[in-house]
Amino acid sequence: MLVYYTSNIEELSPNVYQFREYRDFGRGFYVTSNQEQAELYGQHYLQKGETTYLYVFELDDIPPLFTYKRFQTLDGEWLDYVIACWKGQPQESYDIIEGGIVDHQVFDIVDLYLKKEITREEAISQLSSKTPNFHICINNQLIISRLLHPVKSVKLSKHRIPHI
Image (cartoon, rainbow, N blue to C red; front, side, top):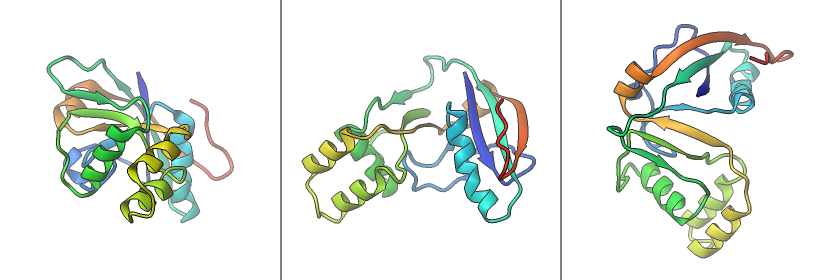
C-alpha cells in the first residue's frame, strides 16, 4: 500500500523515537494512505515559508508477528485510547495503529469531553456523525526498517500540489 508523509526535512530517515510521545496513538511515525490529506497537512509548513516535501512510501503487508489495531470508527474505544495516549498512559501497546485523526472536526468534541462539559455518551454521539480522516501510526522501528520502503519525494509549493 502507498502511504504519504509531509515534512520540512529534505532527507527524511524515519525513527519512531524522534517523534513526540503524547499524540493520538502515542509516539510513532504517522503516515496516511490519503495523498490529498498529506498534501493539505504540508500546507502548514508552506504557510510559514518553509520548504516542504511530500514523501511516498510503500508499506508492505504487516505480518502476524506484529500487533496491529484498526479503529474503524470514532467510537468509545477510539476515544478512550486517544485520551490515554494523550496522557502517556495507553492501556495496550500496538506495533501499528490505524484510525481517525483528532483534527479540526473532532478536537473540540474531545476537548469538551475532557473538560467535562459534555458526557461520554454525548461525545460518542457527536463523534459518530463525523467522517474522519485516517492515519497510520507505526510504533515499531522494525516495521519502518523492514516493511516501509521509500518510493520518492516531491517538493510541494503553495500554488501547485503534485498528483503522484
